Amino acid sequence: MEQRPFGNTGVWVSQLGLGAGELGDRALPDGQAADTLAAVLDAGMTLLDTARGYGESEARIGRFLGPRRKDVVLSTKVGYQVEGRRDWSYAAVALGIDESLRRLQTDWLDIVHLHSCDLETLRRGEAIRALLDARQAGKLRVAAYSGENEALAWAVASGHFQSFQCSVSLCDQRALATLVPQIEAQGGGLLAKRPVANAPWRFDERPYGTYGEEYWYRWHTMARTGDLDPRGLSWQELAVRFVAHLPGVPGAIIGLTQPAHAAENAAYAARGPLPADHVAAIRAAFQQHDEDWLGLT
Ligand SMILES: NC(=O)c1ccc[n+]([C@@H]2O[C@H](COP(=O)([O-])OP(=O)(O)OC[C@H]3O[C@@H](n4cnc5c(N)ncnc54)[C@H](OP(=O)(O)O)[C@@H]3O)[C@@H](O)[C@H]2O)c1
Image (cartoon, rainbow, N blue to C red):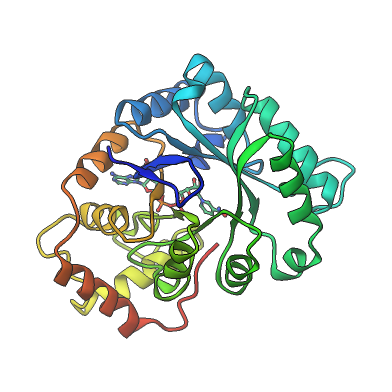
């Protein structure tokens, strides 16, 4: 697994990491969560991305890591759900960070994001100040913003953040046009979230009412016309190789709960970049069908 510099933050990340949202699901047995984390590390992924809002995720990662903490890059997200504190207040961010340190059983966090706060909240400045103060205090190494579209554009232009997290996949390419090059030019880190678009090819029929429905619609729209063409690869391989080798995208965090998926995705990434003309065709397919396909949170 390639290790790459995370912008000019001084942190290095593995090209694929784990999006550990689903690992926080209380319905998922502890053993399966631990097996998934073990499979992720075995496959060479040393980047683990979690959040305060992901149920048991932070605590499970903390319990699992123990002495392996120093071998991984821990990324989390904060800003809300602190008892007695207004969401996005200075205290909600500051106490959220302290709580993440405790749950993850660590003395420092590598990357901490403000988790999808809106433009108005960013402009108020209070949440940003709390994040930067925590960095100054040595609690975290990289101050980051996770979000989309207008708010992401503001965050990138603000100069307050050293790295970003946004949706990038076959089905979510808007950020690639301007924001990704802008982040790269300013030396920022970037994590692609939802990088396999929730693997919509698993569903024969549109999965109405689910989290992945919009991506299924986008994928189906591009694929049924043949404009998005895997050229003999499986859709999963196409998705992984597309996102794992995009310029300006050092790390992509794939969500998984089945341990076998970790090695499978790592093997796809190791096959290297797609041919340049295939990447161009994937970009063209998105642009051709983009019906106001904004970045999805
Ligand atoms: N910052 C934010 O606001 C934000 C928002 C959304 C998501 N995220 C992060 O990104 C993570 C993933 O989000 P996502 O689920 O929308 O997107 P995703 O990573 O594009 O898709 C994850 C899905 O892909 C499946 N999958 C992975 N590898 C596979 C393989 N080799 N073959 C078949 N299926 C495979 C997983 O299935 P199995 O579970 O069966 O392995 C899982 O259901 C979340 O957990 C979270 O950590 C962050």
